[in-house]
Length: 159
Image (cartoon, rainbow, N blue to C red; front, top):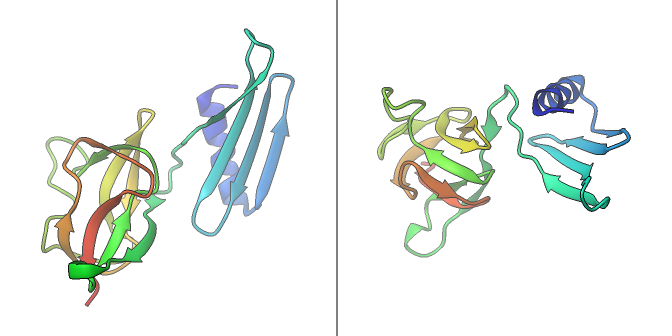
């Protein structure tokens, strides 16, 4: 089973409204769990060299943009701001392509559902949408740098 077939399966499961699907074949087991805001995929494939199952997490992009990780409230000097965090591991980009303008700048007003950045993971570009409305106060990550899961990306003033 190649990555395109897995992506199509994920899209199908997400559109069907099913909460969990397990697929087992001779050499591969796939579990796809969908929830209200994210889709989780686990792929276990038999390793032909060791004849032992090998588990890998495969971040796979679907056509729907990724929602930013849960928003948290800052403490200390940034107590009035909310943080938009990375929902995946990858490379952070502030523009959709090199010749296009930035998605957001400091001072930009955003609404829930607006794309704030793109994160590339395994050659797939995932648009990250804001879950909150407000004004961008600070961009915490430089363009074209690696980001971790749950890493703060933006500070937003919700008022």
